[in-house]
Length: 75
Image (tube, rainbow, N blue to C red; front, side):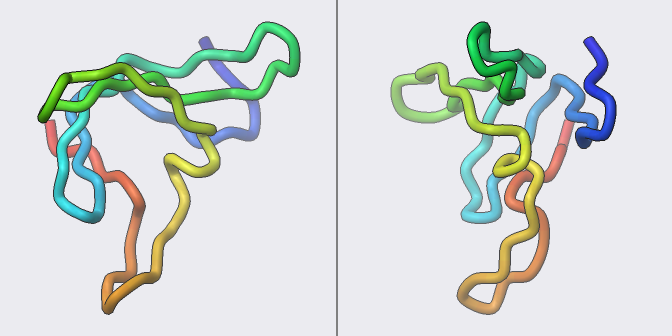
């Protein structure tokens, strides 16, 4: 699935800037609004499934001395 003008998010293992890891399955589009989300699950705790707007998933974070991507692919 391609989404013109949106960042590309590959399936794989990503690390959140706070250190937790997640398995990304891919991107999905909302059936009513057509908003694009990243679908993933936690690789800790209950291994629950989540979605996050693609813009939020791929944004740049500046917090507590950290400056970089919110999530970065590690595998």
